[in-house]
Length: 191
Image 1 (tube, rainbow, N blue to C red):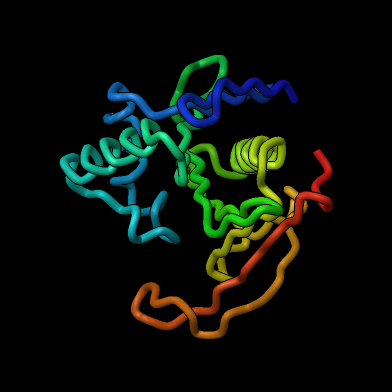
Image 2: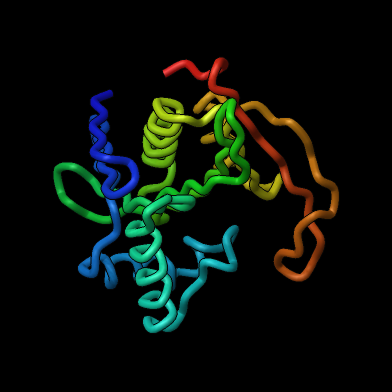
């Protein structure tokens, strides 16, 4: 995997064999809205569902503001296909806790449904984990609904292990559902 980074505090660009992970830009509005307004794409992320383009625009502005912060606590990257330039999703990282021994990052992601089961999420998540572990991160964690087998597989393929199962933790689709919690320590990571 080829990985390039430029000044983490201001600009991030990661490259994998098939993908480019980069900062959001204004031209991403329509392709991002196509994903965020798709109920299938956001089924397991109901807070990300944006049926109105104004909501997507507000989200995009917020993400772009985060990228301009002097000390970045949040980093959301567009995931696009290298060859076509098609926006296929996004990966988000945020600092949960910071200590002299390193930061604990939270991880989230989504991919458009027509690119599911093609390894894009795994490739993007793996590159994101490698990126934060090349810096001051000591731990990364993520959670998903226990029924979301696709997301659980992505996390497991990236070397994350399930640390727990939170029973009846999340309200989703009119009922309480279990949430699986995954994590990976820097010393456990195998690029």
